[in-house]
Image 1 (cartoon, rainbow over the protein chains, first blue to last red):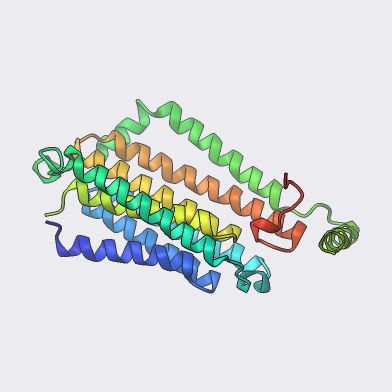
Image 2 (image 1 turned 30 degrees about the vertical axis):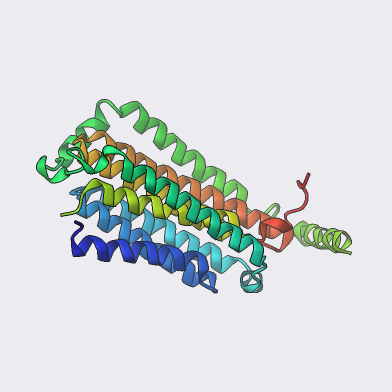
Length: 186
Length: 100
């Protein structure tokens, strides 16, 4: 049976994941998502993968969560508080979630995962020098492509988020867009 | 002690929560949260099975996956900010110019 530390981390991760989606204020949701990612890092520590856990904390909690919080601050607050949700749609979503959970859960419980293969404490943990070696030998091309992807995505994000023009032209464009929106609404 | 099945079940619950968020929420940033939760569940499975085999390649792929998730969030937030600038709204149902 699962040990108490595992259960505590599982409750923390799943609970904060639910809070991240259901919190009324988006900024609390972002903080809650960061805590959920910390919980995943705790799972990695339980799985004897400290290197991946530290990477998770550095990238997810350190970079992604801060990025999301900044984006939330850039968006006007009024747009964040208006929650337009159907009750029907929400009920359908919860039903879909329960169907996925029960069917996949039945599948996993019926599979052979709980047998001999499932006991992972019999084998020695993976040394992180092995990860470094694999990254620099077998996965070296993938590492290079990953670096290019990251650079490309940073350039793409900069190109997307920059202002259209530095001169006063953008004011007129924004007004025009606003006017078009009103026309569509009416 | 815990076994692999426990981690698989936690991962499955996280995927279900993420799908619920993607289906129900109309706020673009919350949909991004859901995608992040699903990606985290996938990483958890990769590391769990990497420990069970035991094989270091699962952890290497998990590291790549985390890095790609960072890139994806950067582009996704850029898109959300552009959409917000165009529509003054982050509700995906209000993004009407491409509605069929």
